[in-house]
Length: 265
Image 1 (tube, rainbow, N blue to C red):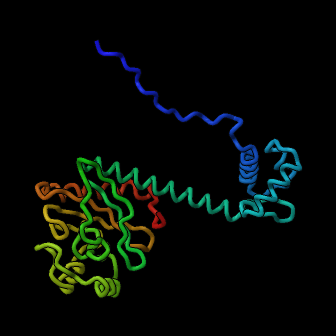
Image 2 (tube, one colour):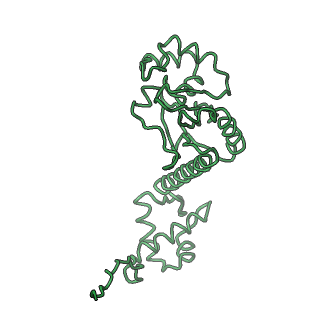
Image 3 (cartoon, rainbow, N blue to C red):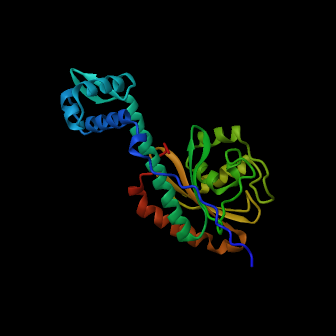
């Protein structure tokens, strides 16, 4: 009869014991929270009282927070400083990014295809977010997306939103080149295609960037910035391309106002 073996113990991360917490950090955070709750500022005595701190301790921490830029002092009142504002801005940016990622994931599941969000910023194509899954993987970026905008639906959709000068400037830097046998052949042909693209029409691309893949991109309005939502499908599902594009267009129309997609993500 084999000898019974005791299963190995798994390491468990213990909850921090109260004695391991840094009291001065806790007290400083309570002061920051008290200041944040006072839009018009507050004096040290009031902040000490609200944070439950002795006045000398509060003075010491407030001076430190002012020195580090997390607070500022004006006429005896304390306000949030630039460092705290940067933290708040970063937190809001992360929240927007999370919101966009979650929404793209919902659309991915809804249409059964990987979904991409891209913008045209400072003369470059930037894919900001991608939502895919093992069953619906994103297109492999085997040729730089920024340099091959002429060959994929995302780039064509973004370029179609630029004026003629912007398009020619982009093509001067990234001229048309053959990526697959289906890629548009030259700058003139691409410019003609872009001119014929309707303002809110889906941009369709079939095997121009990757053999065996078809894509659709939809223009969206993000302030004055050209932006696009796109998705890709395997070639054998090409008949789904237009119905899925119209479905995604409807989803975007319902949620874009509340989604508040930001070019800063």
